[in-house]
Image: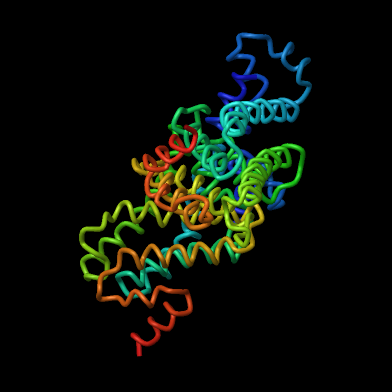
Amino acid sequence: MSHAVKIASVEGLAGLTIGRLAHELRMSKSGLFAHFRSKQRLELATIDRASEILADEVLVPGKAAREGIERLWSLCDLWIKHIERHVFRGAYFFTGAFFESAGRQGPVPNRVTKVVSEWFGTLKDSVQAAQKRDEIKLDADAERISYQLDGLLVGAYWAHLQGGREAFREARSAILRLLASVATEELPSGAFGSLSAWRKFLERRDQ
Amino acid sequence: MSHAVKIASVEGLAGLTIGRLAHELRMSKSGLFAHFRSKQRLELATIDRASEILADEVLVPGKAAREGIERLWSLCDLWIKHIERHVFRGAYFFTGAFFESAGRQGPVPNRVTKVVSEWFGTLKDSVQAAQKRDEIKLDADAERISYQLDGLLVGAYWAHLQGGREAFREARSAILRLLASVATEELPSGAFGSLSAWRKFLERRDQ
């Protein structure tokens, strides 16, 4: 499925056909058709594989971080890293795919929307866990914080694709400023002054 | 071309075929094919029509505003309004289209990228014009401000599509905060405190 993900991540699911994939894999079209049986099944399998890659690169390592504001930061940082490291060759999974799927019904757009919703749910769960640990103020709106974080990530990706060289550095700073604005006294606001200051704070605490 | 824009704005350019358009328009497929001659020409004509709609709804009314920080605000506000008013039925033009086109070569992705770059250029020109009028600090980086504004807009659209009901209100506040942070003493920072305060400021000045 990695080949299918590579094709679709650049050209979209529309550019992915059984014939095209057979050509890339040097397999017979009839053999691949016997396996997938329809373009829609091929598309769904490709979305599932892309979703697994996203989980491996962002969600799983993010959950390795200490629960609380640290995990929230780690998830955002790993999301940016998966773009910086070109985990997907193009910009389709899952930004282009989600904009294309929004407002549509059907197995394919529903599956794309589900992946993006799960990512949003992970962010929101992390905000709420940070509130339970008294690291984010209880009167802060977890959903609103999650939308703001997610918007910062996607907006930075957009700016980066347009040529903004500082887009990811600025996004990381903006995320730290947002986290600082909702953090409790438990976390020193000075720690969020910059990325390096935040890293130093985490290192010191872990010693 | 409006029918073609409607189809593509929901389903992407991949979902737009001459056969599909002929069916929607109750025209003969051969007649439409004689007109467009290829799917690529149909796609290019559809992008051009979508680009004209964007110009009519955002760029032209934006340029009616007084040059300077006021026009910059107006462009951002009109961009949000064109989403709120569902000018395009779906989310493809031009967010999905741009994420899908990024990193690809060819007449169709190049045309999409050109439309998005022109929008970015309009934002940047407006920042620079505001600097010439001494409304935005001369030492502020016009390109960086433009990327930040553009990122806020696209990030808000993303959050809105995910269900964030306050996404556009928050985006407008964030844009005003950003403008306040780069405005000169010429513009009272209090004016940017909220949307209504900013509107009052503009009304007073225009009296």
